[in-house]
Length: 204
Length: 202
Image (cartoon, rainbow over all chains, first blue to last red; front, side, top):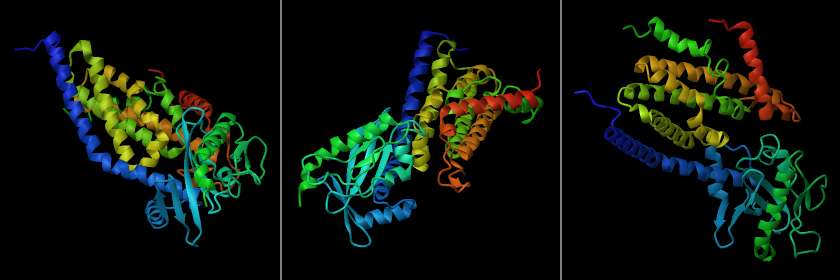
């Protein structure tokens, strides 16, 4: 007997069986690989935090070991507390914002005076390669944040750290050329998100 | 039937020259432009497309006599989408940094015209083995261009290859090459060279 592959019943049964098989297959693959993917995401975050502490270019194992040894997450303040090899204490603040095409994020490491920036690492989802993406790819630009102050001299009421075109003084960093929207977004992220850390920054 | 008969060989070699998916049919250009700013993601993308085209071709070829004609595109899409999802999950689990760089483009393999084109034009009419060869041939043809363009763009854009710095100069950073527009011009040049020296009219 030859099946009529164009009958409605055949088509419906065919699609139903196909969808069931594919659903089980995908669920199985997803469940099997999930632990490894979660580990990768966690490791990537650890590396980003270490980048902000100017510990760059570490291998996976080194990064994980360094992180385990030196960094502690403080849930109450949402701050990563880090003790460097020389005993200095740094705080890493996770910041999130909206870039030109998608989300941007930042890990900002500050000294124990809670005012001076120790290092910064930026990440983005889909900024333009070569322009906005420079905030992540250009380590020299990120290095410009080192030594900047969050508060302007004597004014503890508002966040002064920002990204401004062609200005590079105590609290401002020069914007990325050709990436005005992304640079403005970084500045806005710093201002908005650091304001939420006001209590932490002003506490002793 | 010989495994490497004349027809089978042609199924494999045609997409490398006479029926090249990018150079002659100009398919799959969008992803070819987007992922080629560095060599490593270009190689991974080429591999992913080769594997997916080959296996999608085999699966569709095995099912070809049972697939109802009226929903054949849907069936093809489901097979491709399932394979793409699996590959994307595997990339996330084993080469996380590359999967971050490729971002949405792995998922977009689903809409890559090369895949649907091969399934519709070849796998629906041919046996599994020739379909497999055809898929591998097309995948390699695609990967070849990605690797050429990726290598040129990474070398002239950043002075490195596969992440290793070759020209050790801090200011060697040619933004022009890392922009997608340059990939289009490079693909155009490759097509030009191919037409001028390698392509013979049938």
